Image (cartoon, rainbow, N blue to C red; front, top):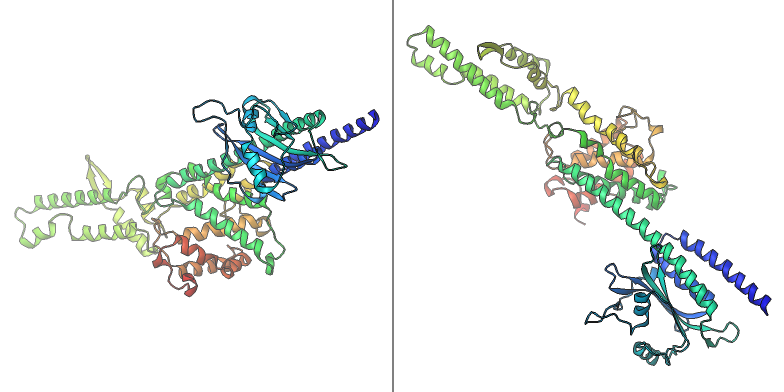
Length: 530
């Protein structure tokens, strides 16, 4: 008899060890809840089981799992939340609720083992009797065990109902051995649950912190608000479409949940390097803009030059004629034309030909007297900026802008990302790389660019083209944007297969419905209103 008992005990201990390993490995918290109840019922022979989880404010026990085998009841866990009211730990008058057995166990931290709930004293089982009357069930033996974490805090309560004899199936009491084993299981389950929650909470914290950083980056410029969010959402939409496709070049490509998370994190962090980029470069709307648009300084300088010329002529001519007076008034016609010319050039909307650049230099050759010194009408820096061939950025400023991709990698590569997120720095920093190897910051070739980086690059350039209020370009229509992307495909900048999927799945249309102005959606076809 003792030998048989010892063998059964060894089996139970081995099983408990396996259960502990399984609980520790489970990452789905809802499935973990189910495993705790299922395993406890299995090795105790209990017909029913309920798992309560302590509320965040520690004032109530919330139903997580309810199971009764003979009544075919399975509630909670992966099947959805239970809507039953939680068990309050305090009465309305603020006194501890010791009448409810599960609340009592949570308050005291002591196990309760009852042979027959109908004969138990000190607890209120009216709810149990009512349930039995409605279902025809007979609740009898009950084992209620506290779940304590590593800090000895109660994080839940495990309640088992109606232990059954393995041979006859009759309801029996929970033996001292069953109680001891269940307490051990509850302890292991509490540790597994605490670890699971800790991992989950850390992931939530990291995601929230990443989004906070992205928001701060977007807020550096009034023109890029929401850029990072839109790029992240668009990247995930493309990735999920790849997962759904069953033919073509991506038929065999499937991103795992971890890979999708890795791409999403990289997308949220792809512009992190912009924390080092001066705002006046990012938002440079005109060629002469720094902290402010220096065209106003030119206006004052031209006015001063005009006044000096007028005074000089006044000294030479005692009484100017009417026509000459009109000509000398204010800035003067020639100066006014030259200033208007420079004002147009300053906008950066036109290509600067050699002839136009020569005219800028000719204007710069003129001088005026400032504080007793002859100064050129335009400084060398102003000439350099006004003679930018296209756009508003000088070569140096373009390098400052491009440096954000390098800084993104430099910053992210110093962070201890977990193994499943180890590629985040590489994906994030490569969003300006191109298939022809002429992108930046590293000039990677097509063979060196993983699909995730190509997705992020397409999402980033599409979002930038669709922007409604960038200072360095007018608002584009959807048809113009798609033509630009087609040119980028032909030039070897964008992955052609990815762009084909982008079009085929009408990702650009779904994006347009969400994010673009109605006036931008010009020739997308009737699909846009569907």
